[in-house]
Length: 181
Image 1 (tube, rainbow, N blue to C red):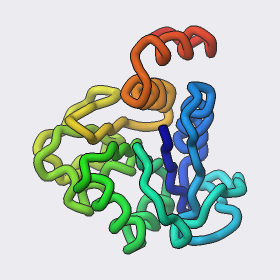
Image 2 (cartoon, helix red, strand yellow):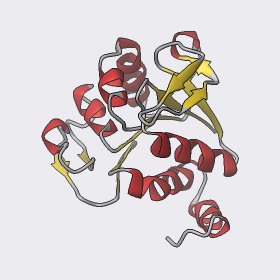
Image 3 (cartoon, rainbow, N blue to C red):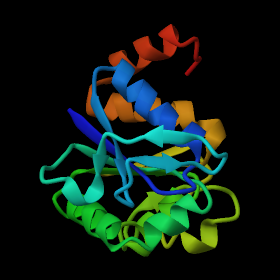
């Protein structure tokens, strides 16, 4: 299994790094990808992280593409035509696409949520462009997984583990990190 988390300047650190950390703990190859083709990307709280890949250099597919939230991270993701192309191609081939916080609004802007149920950060619902909005912490509709924000980041990441591997692996991981599901 291979996952890619797309980082743009201003990404939400907790959401992005929780996903990376828990997927790696579960044994998923999880790569941090610079959407802006930088060697390092700075988050909304000023944390600079070294990337594994640059978006323009990717030439293979993966099982999961994840968009974290964050301001101005999400607007930067939305404005990036390479991000849009990658997300749309992933969705069109039935690969998993996931987003958290304001990230689902990028999925909406890219046309991925038109026939999907989804959730997002409170106050972003008008930008979601989904078939139906939910206030559940994590919503799975087919190949699309969405979540609400920093407070749901662990549950979101565990759901990604469950989808990519299985429920038992996600439950075992939750227990190891002292998280009650």
